[in-house]
Image (cartoon, rainbow, N blue to C red; front, top):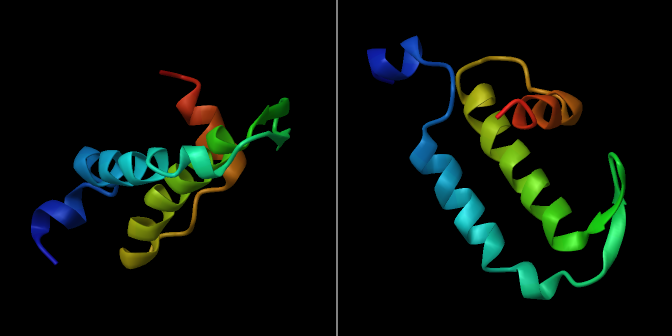
Length: 80
């Protein structure tokens, strides 16, 4: 592991964008509505949110850090 990786605990933007892109390629396979944190939402949107949450937590675990909760991921994503 490089010093750069150790000094920056956040996953790289390129890793997150690659995960999002892969999730978006599957959106047609997820029609309909599901229950989301704020009520009904499109199933493909829920899948993208879960994919991005995993994209944050996978590097967390690799670095020995605790996972981020789904609620925290949602809260932070709304800040932007």
